[in-house]
Image: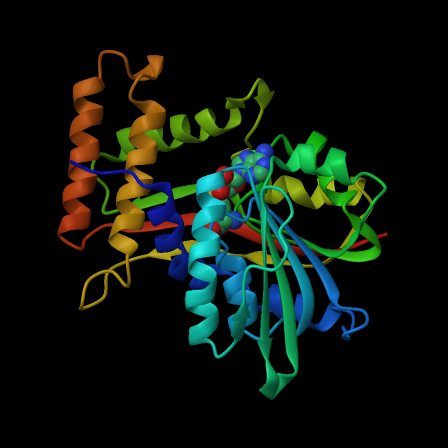
Length: 315
Ligand SMILES: C[S@@+](CC[C@H](N)C(=O)[O-])C[C@H]1O[C@@H](n2cnc3c(N)ncnc32)[C@H](O)[C@@H]1O
């Protein structure tokens, strides 16, 4: 029986994202970041930050040296896990970790320093709904860089984007990554017409999703962002694909990626098991899901999700 743990899924997703993130877009971001000093550290806000894997990646890849990095997520359990993991990975990367600094309510603060590189990074981890956070911050604070990683395609982007961008100062940057864009590919095929129907229905559930009474989801978020960013006054500095490509090598799937695949298959099952279009074909669908699980167990399943990354300049 599969045990779904969202925190384990986010941890397992890290290596998949590491491979997927578009290098050109990353390099464009790196080149566009303003110089940061101890008097004027780079102010970064990450929304929907999960367990903090993008923060870890940015520090591991030496993108941040002098920064104040605020990471928010709606789920307290994710933020608690981010706070638990932070001293572990930061220590492994050679940073001295001072934690906790004086905390805000519902927030945790840490300072990471590394004398070899004169690095000094303050991290603020906060449990908050992004829209409450934006309402609270309105006109009070603005950031040099907004990060939304594997997050925008969960929102109603046309209404959410202007709000998110209001967090950035004029001339600041946004780094919007792993935006799903309309292709879920599973190999080997089981029954091509049925495979295609499941993909279509699965994407439709993303388009019709309502969360807390709000439309929330877009199975073609990636391509739509070109127009939506432009309409919101963002100059796209770079864009490129960041497809997830998961397959087994001679030693099986890397890291915890078999779990990642099981979680994806379980997500598809949960989204479609009661779908009216499959009424009368539940047994076929359940058998299809079981077959996908067996393919993972035998290291046979290949999973590709098409996604896009963006870096933009806010005017
Ligand atoms: C797909 S996960 C991605 C997490 C993280 N960026 C990563 O890739 O590891 C989306 C995250 O957004 C968070 N989230 C969803 N709606 C939110 C909201 N309205 N405000 C803040 N966080 C939200 C969820 O709790 C979840 O951790």
